[in-house]
Length: 93
Image 1: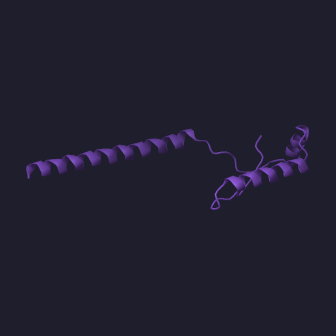
Image 2: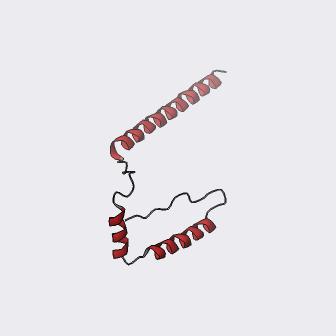
C-alpha cells in the first residue's frame, strides 16, 4: 500500500513540475513576443501613385499583374483543401 501512495505522490509531483515548466515557457515566449515582435503598419499604401509607378518600372503592367494573381489564385485553390480559402492577396515589395 505504501508503494502505491509513494508512486502516486511522485506522479503528482512530476506532473506539477512539468506543468510549471510549461507555464514558465509560455511566459517567456510572451515576453519575447512583446519585446521582439514589431507590428507592421496596417495603414495600407500611403501613396498609390508611387506604388503604381513602381509596378510600371518593373515592367509588370496592371493587366499582367491581375492575370498573374488569377493564375496563382487558381493554383492555390486547387492545392488547398475545400475548407480553406484565399481571403486576401496583396503585393509585397
